[in-house]
Amino acid sequence: MKKIAVFADVQNIYYTTRQAYGRQFNYRKLWQQLQYMGDVVVANAYAIRRDDDQQIKFQDALRHIGFEVKLKPYIQRSDGSTKGDWDVGIAIDVMEMAPEVDTIILLSGDGDFDLLMNKVRERYSKEAIVFGVPMLTANSLINSVDQFIRIEEDLLL
Image (cartoon, one colour):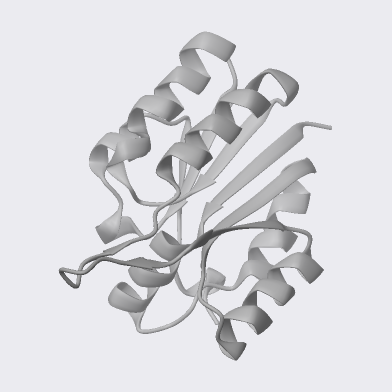
């Protein structure tokens, strides 16, 4: 059975499914689908810490499903802009896990990850898969992987 490592860019998936469909992503259905793909040995969900009850419940649900939830503080700058992405953390974790598994699965539409997924394939000869919202996933990311799995109705709440 293939060993799989899963890396979920929670903010990206939340905003792209909301923008495209007005609905939320169903992590339970994703988990069911992943189990048919192989043995999930690592599943990280990268999110922003906002200490509100709804976020805490969501993060607890992710843990219950089987994800390790990694949190970064939500930062609001004095100019009103905000910061809270996990791109570098995701990249580091993917590169550390790539030698240990057969398949790297990324949930994101962020084109910044195209270099990372190319590296997974070229340096480690690993299968690279992306789950993303079709109209909101960068073409460069789609082209960098072995398989692009469309987030559509079957993976939404």
